[in-house]
Length: 380
Image (cartoon, rainbow, N blue to C red):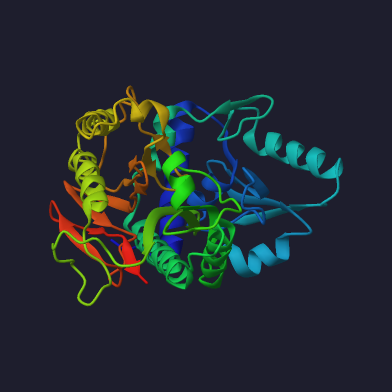
């Protein structure tokens, strides 16, 4: 059911009130950018893309739901960000009045009972792990918003790479990508760009002043509605060294060379392991085996590989002992890499099917294990 926003907020308020009963607590207090977006069905409480917490909080008790903010932010947030059945508690923006008034109010409405928080302060308790895991399973309305984010992010990456020139620096490519994201209403959580030389040395690194040269790799994570979509794309400046295999996009400038073939074969092992009921660690071990077969042993121990996505990227990183069980409605993004090559998209797990949220139908692609996967764009 693709709920309207008000019904989604009501559902989440009911969830939080269930937590209060289970934990015998008096209030749930959510400060983080991630949790604020979750509770409000996509609103933002921060101007700063790197901030962990913002200028507003969510406070939920058994019989009320509040937005706590200050006078400098309340008008804009009411008019442009937050909708739903919230009561606004607005304090002066300056310290120490803001802190004192807000803390007094929170303690009062909690009635002396414990306060559960995502970022607990003094006399507050952390949200139990089981409650934190509840948000990893996305509602259909969240999934619908996620599809929008994924499509816009993929379009931005394609625009930036199609504009790129071999004499551009890595920073110029990153800047073109950030501009493309902002023009589409997306925040750039991170943008990584590397040229032919640095991509051979580093799996993932911030853009430097080096020229792109013959090959460019662009990896990004973009956010809107609080949801983070990650992907990577590659471009070769010059003709492709095709194996003769046809792509899945008519007329696209691309073909699968040896580097693409090796990279996509490795990735397919990980994606095949993404099934409901499997532990996230199974994907990690599948990647470990695939790297060993590709002649790159120990890569999973020297390079991050991704994991469960959602309101953080990642929400849970894949590791040897991450025994969290994959469920329908979870989002997943992995970024396996080989020297000079990488691949990444954000997928939604539905039963044992993976739906690609960041698929770009205009990008050269090929079907691997029933999934359309991106190739290296080859333009002179």
